[in-house]
Image (tube, rainbow, N blue to C red):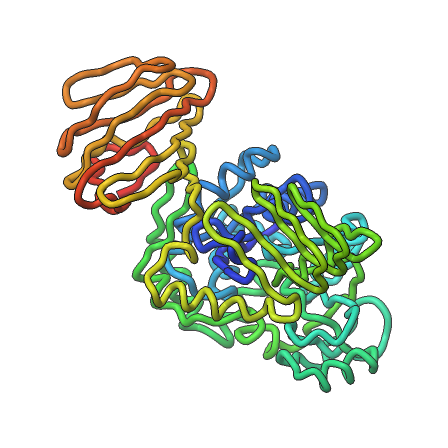
Length: 465
């Protein structure tokens, strides 16, 4: 069995903590591990081979590094050059899985879900595998805990355990959802599936031949290096964009559902995170440096500063370095409207955190004014930034801790703590950390334009243009 982990999402329903450049699957929302890491750890004891991860190009280094941190060093990472929904993503994973001539079981999992009963989930996977081995298409339905209108539903035929799907149902209104839950015949659509790779591809070819053809061409023309498989942009972009539900599961004969009750959540909002988080006797779920008095059913997430809550009921408060959200818990599904307004205004907050992660480390923009910017830069041991230049800004680097090797034009400098250098506008330069501890430095930029797109790269070990 090969886990196929879908990590292409860039959701903002947990804004301001989740952003397009650092979405929720990379955040430790329900424990010490990120949701992506927890997804792999949940299934790793059952996996016969390392996972196939399908991700966006912009997230490739975060995927690789987070999996490496939890001991998964041999994952196959397929990079989507464009978002085309789940059906094409699973198709390219299935094609990759069969390249060695085998026809493995695929366990398809979103990377951003929470499962609290891990052992129960593993038992369910083993139960579903027996049916999938024989050529069945299996989906996992979640036993509903209430009339949720944010999920699609699956109506199952009568019976126990794995049973035939009678109907897939779109997200219902409140009245219909209540009726579904009361009947006991309906389950939440979890977006998790199991089937043989060949079975999925056969069903896709029968119903979406244009999609499968585009995926085959994208794989045939893919560029492979030591770390990633980069799907061909033109071919993959030509694929129709559709979910696996629409493309296959709702049309194929003999689709089965296994109802499970394993403490599942898609953590699709702050209200959903509040439900799965540890709560005190008054229903408050707090993370970070939070103090409260006379509060009930609040969700508070502090990312550094002290948060003080007084006399609040059913309120969500989220504090990050560059944005604060205060919302009624019943309105958090409407955050997308706030994000849309920010995007329309051309603001960076929907996309970037103040602290931005790069394959070599990170930088934190600690001050910004007209014609200047101050960053705190962390370079990981052994890491190297690109050889680059800027047309519109000069830079002054001051080492706070660690050791930095600086290329400045034709010079090479070795800087230690409290030492500095100046990079004039238009001069080629590079920063490296030759040491065994992180390199911390302060960068002061000055110039007429300070945007990140004012970078001309000449050499880059990470393959960035």
